[in-house]
Image (cartoon, rainbow, N blue to C red; front, side, top):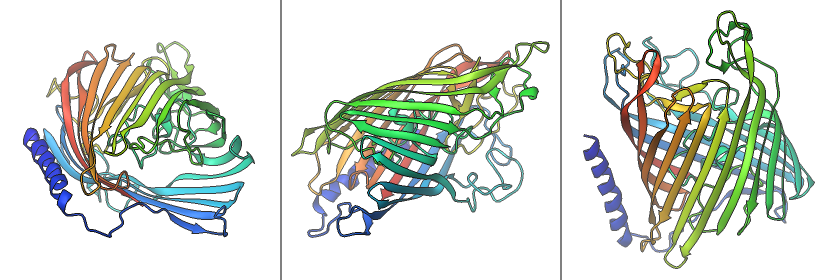
Length: 463
């Protein structure tokens, strides 16, 4: 079934691309023009609006033992979902003052994404499922140019993250379908979808680009007195975090007006950068070696080193190559590990007593994603020659290596995908197949139990 679905979707994309060569409409301009309201004649004062939607159709081979909404075992699931629906306003009220407001929703399916108190992921209770999700703020920050270009200060709920380029990745122009999630080291624990409240400084000194921050993370976790296991867990605390990312641009310089790093320029720029960064928060987690031992607090430390290459190969044909690789070392405390599933439909599984192969990570597409240990992520893409109507295809592949202390053995997984670029990143259709490791429970510990896959078809438009 999965092979037939993949084949049919690839045929549809290829057929559309081939047929479109002769169907372009003369005189119709599909090029991107920013929605910009100029507040003075020079354009130094302006308001810019950006909006985008990413729609997913998913077919998931569920983890073993996954239960559906009625408590029945379900081997696979298909869904239609809104991965992201966003609005962003950038207001340059003067050449030295800027306001950014960004709001929207994420991850609304037939089951998930609804308002508080309704049926949630894996719940057997009745409710409204994913209906009526509430808009929430992603970014709300102001910035002052102390020394334009070289030194800017800002404050608010912001995305000027440390650790890696991918930790501040734009969701408008992924080189792949989406992020691997290992890049967002606190996702939905002490942050609000990769944002924290704080102050930051950023700027560019020649080809050296920097961003540093001091944040007050959101309170998340258990009370310190409630910790009772040797496995580290998030605890409530009031400590500030620090972070930063430093980036050297060897070829074309990139803009840092906004915090969002571009995933791929599709040949529009010639970029080669290397970077490194960190994130740290004292007392973010805690553990207890035994029932009689004292509770021990741990400092969360995340380090990253990365390299980014994006360049045209033949400008006349429109071909380009894009490559990125990042290594993460993470320390959240002893054996800390989080299982995450993006747009996971069904989180519940059968008990081990009735199914020894039932997933240790949870149902649906949940998998070990963040934890103490090392991770390595690499992606590579190639823009094929443009068709006669200006559209093009971009095949890509990724590989993720994870070696978490809690599991003890490393795992590898991959993504294979294809973009059909109707108008660059402004309008594209993407098909991606993703693998993931599966684990069962043996004597209370995770043990590898093969792999599962997921097929995703996305339509993406931003204006």
